[in-house]
Image (cartoon, rainbow, N blue to C red; front, side, top):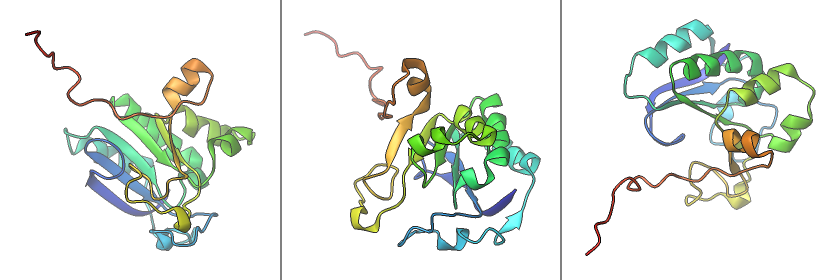
Length: 175
């Protein structure tokens, strides 16, 4: 697969410590994109899924894999294979895309379905510079959604991801 960059210890592309793979190639070309160098499908460099999977093993503190871009659905088959490698290591998978969830589901493409099946949280929708927000958790613009695909599949209804309460396991004693 072609990638533009690899960050082995990201804390901004989903919760916890993550391996973030910036895929190469993006048909959306959103104005104001923070990664315009990823748009050209012939840019970046070639790397095998096995090489990227080996990166997952280098840091035992990783919570997950984030597929960003570019657009991972431009290389959906390869990204799905890498996502399955992450899942085999009990890591969660976040995938960023300029497509909407509804548009991805409407496509009759096995590679899109495979990547959606291997993704835990889908960050969907184009980046809109007019809606850029530093307050939008894990998103560039507030129109983008954090979709909990596991809960969506289980309920049959699109369900947004909510950040877990990091202190929820503590019990407050009765006084």
